[in-house]
Amino acid sequence: MSYQNPVFIPGPTNIPEVIRKACDMPTIDHRSPAFARIFKPAVAGVKTVLGTREGEVILFPSTGTGGWEAAITNTLSPGDTVLVGRFGMFSHRWIDLCQRHGLNVQIIETPWGEGAPLAAIEAALAADASHRIRAVLSTHNETATGVRSDIAGIRRAMERTRHPAMLFVDGVSSIGSMPFEMDRWGVDIAVAGSQKGFMLPAGLAILGLSPRALAAMETATLPRTFFDFRDMQKSYAGGGYPYTPAAGLINGLATAVEMLQDEGLENVYARHHRIAEGVRRAVAAWGMRPCAASPELYSDTVTAVVVPEGFNGTDIVTLAAQKYGMAFGVGLGEVAGKVFRIGHLGSLTDAMMLSGLATAEMCMADLGYPITLGSGVAAAQDYYRKTAGIAAKAAA
Ligand SMILES: *Cc1c(COP(=O)(O)O)cnc(C)c1O
Image 1: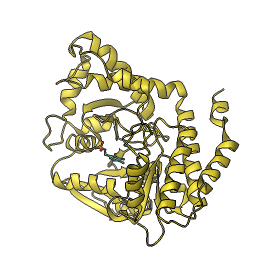
Image 2: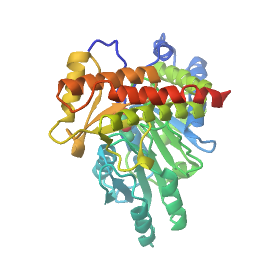
Image 3: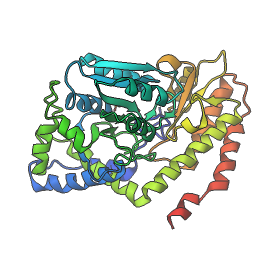
Image 4: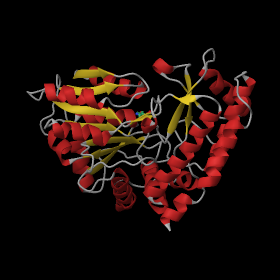
């Protein structure tokens, strides 16, 4: 790899220069007020990005996977039932993590390319008259298939069935890039990581916790030490940590949330939507289609492109890395080889995206795909020309 090109993987994402500089700082005493001065604005900014006033934010030195583990071990007990749809690699991994912790996981098998199965979730909640289901878990943006699920729709199903379960949402590849409304959607735990929408290196699990989730930790008996919310809350009250925090990353996070708020969250979301729509126009011009089953499911952070019969999507990714020094995402699990993924989140512009689309075209031409060089790029250019400045105007 040349390290000169942006990456087009759906995380880790490109790190803006100012954030890299913010992460690179001298050692500070994390038990001194200097740490609190970094930490407090980072936490306040994350709350805004999550869309919560009522909730609390906790940051672990970890990744999104650690955030999943923290969510369940702090709120549930062995044998508790959780309800979850499986429709991609990331929903699958969270299910696996729950099973390994001895939870009773009620799985709704859903075709990959579909989103959270709202009708089946509602039926399962309605059938659970004794309220054994303690939590409904859902991936918001399934990074393996490029599918966005309707989290507000899950909350409505819970309201219609008057079910008291908690709602836990994996927003690792959506938060900070696509609208996320923790309070409005009644999300009890939101899980994010530092290396996607927050544009940082990997190393932080970022969690938003509702008052209900925090109350659940009083009776939950799954074992936890490193991830114990109670220890974090005690130390946070004094502006510190129960152990050594990742101070550089937290300093970078303070910069990242400032950048997102300076741009304006609505503008950040509009930029992601516009870049993503250009990618989708390119895919259509290639005569191909996204893995997401229908337009309302399209993700604005990643597109899994279904490759034609007889081709292996992984070859595009391998060739792009070897020949052109550019990174795309491979297909995972059930869709391995059937798709390649274009990540379009984080620190990205339309012009950067055009370079990614142009390189994907070169790879496909090299591999004998039935495409015309420039066709996808032209379709994206056309869309970007027509929509340039719209997000900026909305901000003015
Ligand atoms: C990247 C990702 C994760 C995993 O996060 P890690 O930081 O790699 O542990 C979880 N869920 C989704 C939806 C993701 O995209």
